[in-house]
Image (cartoon, rainbow, N blue to C red; front, side, top):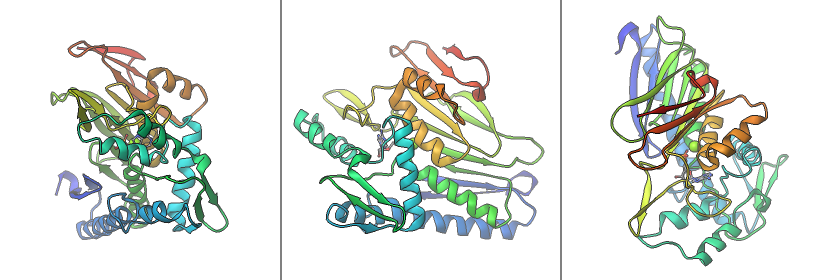
Length: 319
Ligand code: AMP
Ligand code: MG
């Protein structure tokens, strides 16, 4: 139990710790709502994970190049949304990158060969996927296509949790998926917005900045925590689907959007696009904000470039 009757509960899903901070007077009701929310997240993990062989995504990957596969309506909706996000980000975020992601994850200390990368690249892109809106079916038109929702699944699970909590009458809450995505629902007790800290990507335990959110989501993508080490070099887990190589991106990319599915997809896209591509993306009017942290050389000061939601100045340095 926190101050003012809010409760905080945590459970592990999708390789991270989901946390719910729920505000309200009726503790039993909040605990029931949290229990239901965790059951829902568990269901979503069983549906979307590429690590669970019986998941709907694995079944799709196993069968959709031979026949049209009917997909659960909400999952279909998500996949249709990821196609739009791939188009809008010029495929910097692209859930059809599954074969590439798997190739780099299984590199086992050796760089993938140019042939392996070229072959995996051939399977990437929504041009190889037919979505049928009437039937909610999906068909792969090229062999080797693998969907992987690693860059958007946590955000989607956060959105579904927020939806469930709202249906249960909870209107002020903080829903987070590890340090990757958080949705700030309403306000905390006695404040007009939630204060969310962004950690320094150099892992020194310090806070880089704080943003204030109300009915918005924030996602963070970086490669400092998840990478493979090959021949003494670190290769991050975010792959540029346009080159087939790990994005040689900034230290950190953050996105704020009205929903967590979008912020999660966009933080991955911004990481891949880097500063110039992100500025280009934001030239069209978008309901999204960004913060990108760059460091030219290890031990040099950080450069932060951000849009207005992240407050302060547009470009700043941080020692
Ligand atoms: P995130 O931490 O949200 O940026 O997501 C990164 C994860 O998404 C990786 O661990 C991969 O599983 C997958 N992924 C990597 N690169 C991409 C990409 N460019 N587009 C979509 N998914 C990706
Ligand atoms: Mg993401």
